[in-house]
Length: 603
Image 1 (tube, rainbow, N blue to C red):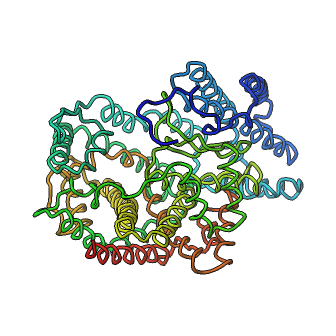
Image 2: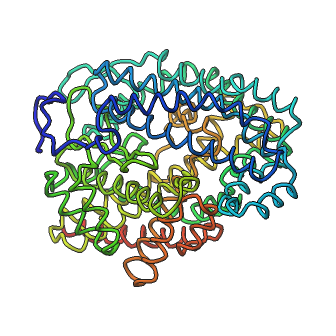
């Protein structure tokens, strides 16, 4: 499974290197039969509409129907999207995926009455239902999550009006996406060999890691020259997006757009504020890391285009897939036998689609439904980064496996707030394992730098985004016009605060706000930083605090959505409303920065 110069077709990939989707449907005919069942069952949706007020039995029947058809639909959707992703040029599975997506829209529309109808029932009515029908007790938390937003639900006519304006509210993000991904024309630059390269979003990210400084500078300035030409348009779309968030929050009687956004996952705003506060307190560590980067790159001035290039050149170690499997099992050994049994099952029972083939979707992910295996897509290359990706996605898949085998369907998933913790904990364990087992100073330095760069990109950078996102919403709420000049001046000052005096004040970076898709996601990005921080703390607990810490961690993996996310994490041993878990993460960062600084002196 080593790298090849020519990609194989899907048919040429050895079976053992592909995922086994026959455990979902034996063949496409079985998919068609299951598809027909859902298509027929969705016709019954209207027969349940308007029945929730008819008593506990009717309420249970409707709830059971909604969950059952949703469960069947998810299996169809996952099978079709996995089949499509393994070879996106296969027209048979393009069509299968399109049909499953269309069916999903049809089912969603047919069930759209359910949640509003639940919300129309008074609390005492629902309480009476649960008392009269013992089977509803199991659904108590699920029902609570539905009705928790009742105070922010408007009268039917107003709800209908807001719903009808949904496409309008989403238009700033749509306009940004079209402009950013389709209409912008980026210049060409020359690489280190004199070859012309057409800049694009993907190419830009690669060029920022190029070891030739002139190439990085040309890419950086070329990209931002284009954004500068459209800065007023981008400011207008972003400002309108922020106004939409603030308007909807105000219409629903929330105190702020942030409160409205976080309430969806019942996450207290203290989690957000604590993250920003603790990261700001620890910015001197990032400043110190930037000084180290400046020294190692041997530059008179450190610029933003120097922040992503590898400090230590190419990775001094590689792994074949077979070697990576062994390393992953060894690195995850602290998770215990129960966890490792699932990891080995994933490796040995074809949960993983390993190699790259023609037409295969790029990147990597973990995906599945309640009634499927938690499959992993990879596009394997023999690199250390791929080993980290493998254990990362394995963290997601084991999380999904434990959730689905310990919770019934109604609680058989988990929110994004919890998702990245499981995957990043695995990355932390792999880092610790490599630092314990690798004695070559160059390898150790590379691993340390890999960790520090990951921390920088996830905790520092995503918190910077989160801080700016909240700043924009607060300023708009105060009536401040979010003009291009105001946004650029504010973002430039924030960027300087984060990276410190070691970094030159490049005028181009003041425009970075104009190209960040996450600013249109409505208070989403902070979860990357909280998840990474929680994972660092949990990995330390698992490694150093014994069986109880592992037991608590497994409890989190098995909880699914049976409790509110913050409460799930408290049971795991991390109170995300307090500062300690983030401070612990910075302790790890500082320890590894200390070691890298000392190690570099010996190279």
